Length: 182
Image: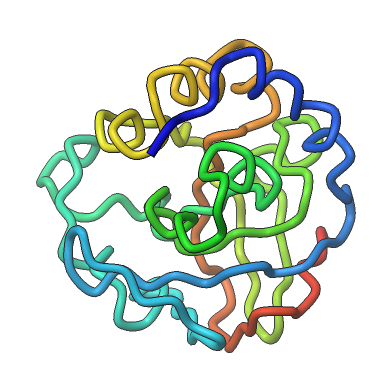
């Protein structure tokens, strides 16, 4: 698959910047039951202790915790649906990003700083401070320019690679529901 050049990626910034600020749709939910395995879901249960039920987050070690346990502030990964649509080019490639939730919503630091809360269905998420950055897998799947794009100064301000969150109220979420900043 061909990847987009930096010029084409930057041409999509205006569309991404038009993402709704206060509420937007849940476009995709993805569960990662095993490393490199993805399940696209219509509905998911979020838990304050387990994150997305059935996701492998609870088994993923973290270099950012003292004991290597899963990082509590990196329980849920969220990516802007417009940003992933741009870098992935096809919706069936969105799950390759590795995030669990894809929202048509402004995820920028200015709009959703650490501590901000998002209500989806009966669940509530809280944006956490650890940055969500791309890795070698992101480069392999979407190209070097895509990685440079999401990790550029503008990309970091807009959180184009996404944000981390934790579940603060367990509940059920569905594709097509409205995610609301609260």
